[in-house]
Length: 303
Ligand code: SF4
Ligand code: SF4
Image (cartoon, rainbow, N blue to C red; front, side):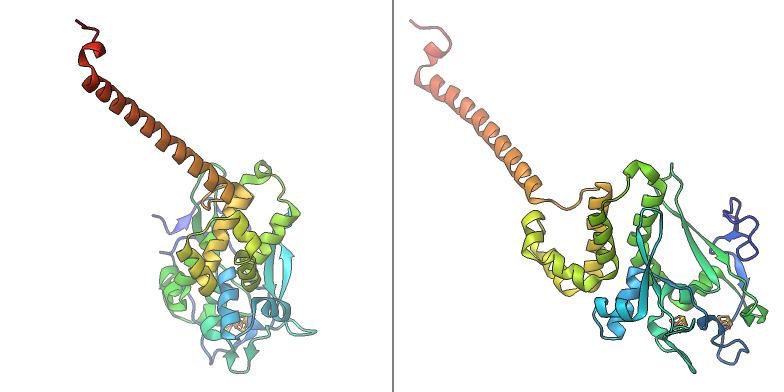
């Protein structure tokens, strides 16, 4: 596979001139003694994935709702109002609320964008392709002196160093939803206000989503196995993955969760099938009985 991908959506951009694969080599290093230390955190525009929020709220021991209010603001990712969430900078300024003199105050749980910088992750999906393609682009901003450092490494090596694999894997369900919505365009129609609200809560406000999916009203509609119920009641990652599954069902009709009505239909169909089998067996048993009772009569060979 070539290191560079030909059909760049940014052919003339000075910031992202080429799309690259993970094998491409970059020259970059960021370290504490560098002259621009913290410069990138002083003027932020950082979008968060659901997994970023999950990690940060856990680290800060906050509910997702409190985290969203204190550290983020919502924005619209597309013309239909699908919501994304960005970091809210410090009051009256542009710096990240987690920036300290020593560097990032949440380093071990820093979001995906901070880990990737100065690489941009681009997920693309063409209308006639089912699977997404991932590509990378280099972000070169004047304030960032890391590009002048001599170290060379591939993007894959940089991703490993920054620990992004787990972040990418756990956000892929969310990325697929966004891509699918974008690539489907008007064919899926504009989501209802309720679906958009559900998208926000399910993706970003996990604690509220847990209240919703463990409520009696949810369980009146959806049929969940006991194991799954247990997982989503106690495990945030399982809850988040269930959220993406539910959203695929609600937004794109990709049904993977039985509803009670469907469950009833399935049970009725199985009952009918069982009854038909019993009828068939009964018919056979009946003919044997008849044969045993009066074999001559059965075959029309009466004396
Ligand atoms: S989370 Fe950390 S690395 Fe990211 S912008 Fe804030 S201070 Fe910088
Ligand atoms: S080298 Fe770039 S990423 Fe590192 S602190 Fe400086 S501006 Fe930020």
